[in-house]
Image (cartoon, rainbow, N blue to C red; front, side, top):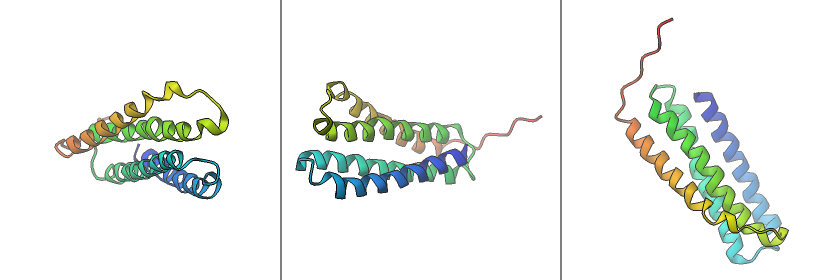
Length: 134
């Protein structure tokens, strides 16, 4: 599982760099400043939580606790919902699609981030789990 979080974290950080460069060079002339700001917020939170996934992956080498794994999955889901919805909301006018359904998705993603951080915190109180005997 730890490699999964290391892979997800590094892949999502890589994508944040690519999307950030695309926003800075490709979207700056297309989007209104408010839309570009929304896009950049998505990038910022994706980066923060990609680093959180890397921390989960690294800590999983030393801490064998279920809440840490759950925190990683909540961070991942939060990136998909929060940052993903902000990307779509920021470019909706360029591609002329109705994004009204995205309104409630962004706060759900933010809530998943909060739960992820709460689980990360709670994991510090868990004792390492024993491996099952074969």
